[in-house]
Length: 365
Image (cartoon, rainbow, N blue to C red; front, side, top):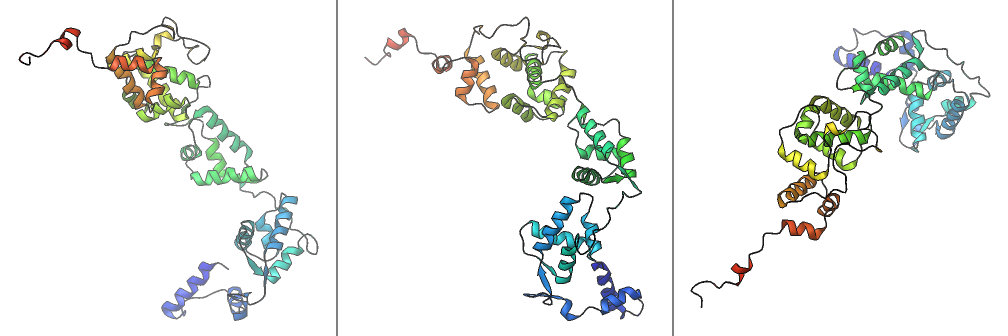
């Protein structure tokens, strides 16, 4: 019987002596039949009538593996155990923890399939349907939308996310198991997902995302303004530039900012200057069919081998920009195509003129 039932009986008995509480005859007979020897005691299990659960649990695992249609709950009911008790014993044995069960229950479990017949494989419940179309529909939504998780799909369908996760997990473990009819109807009715999900652009590559981000910088937009339009953070965009790897959220953010900003110049002169030092091409230098292809180059811009006219101010801005991205000074100079000697010469303070250096101070003769 349920533990809550016993707790309720004890609570009512303590409150008014149990005079106003009635129980069924079957429940009363079960409770009255329990003796002290039947209760678990430290060191001797169920009144000394317990056995190691490992052999019986190994037998149950073998039955379930050899008969995929059998469920643990059906096996438990076949031997007079509660499914939760059998599941707890099975979990402890699988995890390597010591577990004892009643000797009579262990004997009944070990007899299944030989001395005792196996329970019939239960047919699918009348309130369930095949889960395969639901699982396929969910996969289709995740393919159509970047960053669409089960939680968003479940909320759009008006169901509990954990319920959908559990149902799909049960289907993956046992494809013959059905799914609740109402749950399936709610999920299959979802054809579009709201924000923050965005339609997937299969042709967009990580190379294309980085080029779009660089092009916006070349147009005068800072990472802060791009991230604000795209609904992300500057740190996320810096990670994209540094790691050269993209997430669905970054993909959605960059494409949103590209759609909003690529046709108008930005206000930041510093962003344009930094982009020029890196050789980042503006949006007009890219054709829509070429920006996502690594083997294509921008049109109408300088080549990589072009010698940029470095100035101390420009180099200072570039080093500051790359340092903000988490790039070390040596790697930054390598990316800029400058040697350490050349960089030190550009950043060194101007030396005094020869005339001034050789002239003795007045009054010190």
